[in-house]
Length: 256
Length: 254
Image 1 (tube, helix red, strand yellow):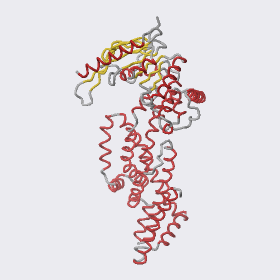
Image 2 (cartoon, rainbow over the protein chains, first blue to last red):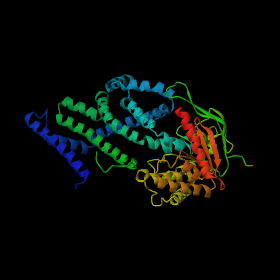
Image 3 (cartoon, each protein chain N blue to C red):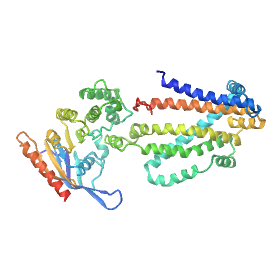
Image 4 (cartoon, rainbow over the protein chains, first blue to last red):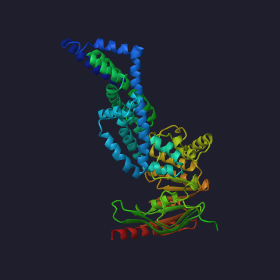
């Protein structure tokens, strides 16, 4: 029997090939500025990857995504633990975060442009503000799902607060943290493009704006693929970390 | 005469009902002593306050009134004093799923900041004594119910506590496994000169384990107690326990 992992990869490759095939057919029907041939898109994608100055734009966007996510993760983690341990903190902070969740990413972009001068700080602010509520609520959920039985068992040994945090709280919230990173990564990739489109002079979003002004569809697709590739690589890295960190979980032989 | 290891004097515990309508009395002026080296089996029906008593001794719950002392100290207020002094075996194994059997046994020793090498050695030795040699690196999901409970017993003994508290630790196991573990448990308690409070709802188990049996009725008060020495008429004690429990049941039905 073929390895299920190989089967999964082949199935994913087949669906992507089908999509590329459909695009290629459309490129024969419509003019190149609407649907450029797949080969042109691939060539432009490779060109970005091998050209230092262009790759720098991709790496700049990646750094902005990581910076924003890391900032939101740290703030969100602190807020989640504070809310989880104090009802008063929850009463004050949760409504504000819920309010923030309702603010569109584009509004944060406008606020950032009005409030701040520095481009990098603007982007960081936008990234943190748009992903902070999700990080906080996801880590809070993980914290609250902590088993009362395990808490009492650990408390019976009279741990210090730090020991309790290290031995019980961290392992309890790790699955929630990994899920939060996976969910927020996609959101962050979308938001960073909007932030760069409007308020930056470099990065994938800025390059996308340039391709739109040049009416260059192959370029637009190539820059978009950079972001997709970045998200895929990071997702796979998180999956690998998750597989290692959660290796203790029982897996049923019967697939769902 | 030596001071008792555990001493309850008119201890009461009241909980607020979850719906907020009034209070629920779980323990009503409970008084008893447990001497050093004694194994006391606490028997009673579900909801009679056995676990509340257990949580007060463990320092997880504070009495509403009265005085609870363990080795002369308040187990709730003097929380840190009891570091390493009380070992607990719970009804379910309460193993951390992300830790191997060895790491679960090592947990208490790590919390108590014991030397890492000595902690590992002690954890391995306890796993071996409980017949789990070769399973040190297994995660809890890979162990049977009986093996998991053995790990939790090893975890409690590994910190070398003065007092062992056991809350129906074998109730979820099949009778064969439970019987083996009971015998093993009593042997370990005696061998290591521990004081133990063993909560159960099975008369046979209480009589097999305890030097003394205390029967609780609701809310937690002692309805009957008997020492189980060499000259004790065990059949008579058993009969009396059954009678007390039957009276309790009849009072509840009425």
